[in-house]
Image 1: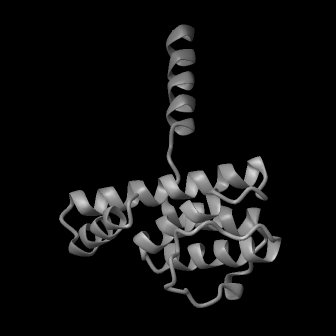
Image 2: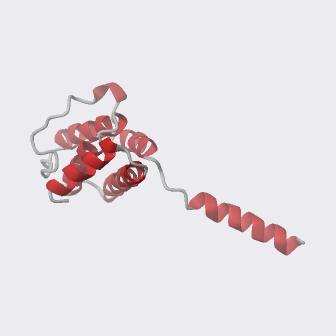
Length: 134
């Protein structure tokens, strides 16, 4: 009986550790990791969101704020391309890179799930990402 109880606890712990964050929770993690206020996010600039981000800290924070805004508005193509651009910056720390990677993967998962469910907007976002070469 004790072995069964131990096995059940280990299984529950393992299941809890395997949870993947949603795009919304990843956006919150980005806000915390880059110390961005929710009202600080500037309007999205349509000029090549996947371009590498300049190395300055302010530019990185602005790019992350734009990505967070895109995630919150469920503009997953914009969020994906912005996050890819930030990842190429040589001035981010390993921890920041991990936050960005986790957010990008969460966006991909949410986008794939919506596209698989037949969401036309999600399918258009996937096409936009493919056309951008990602």
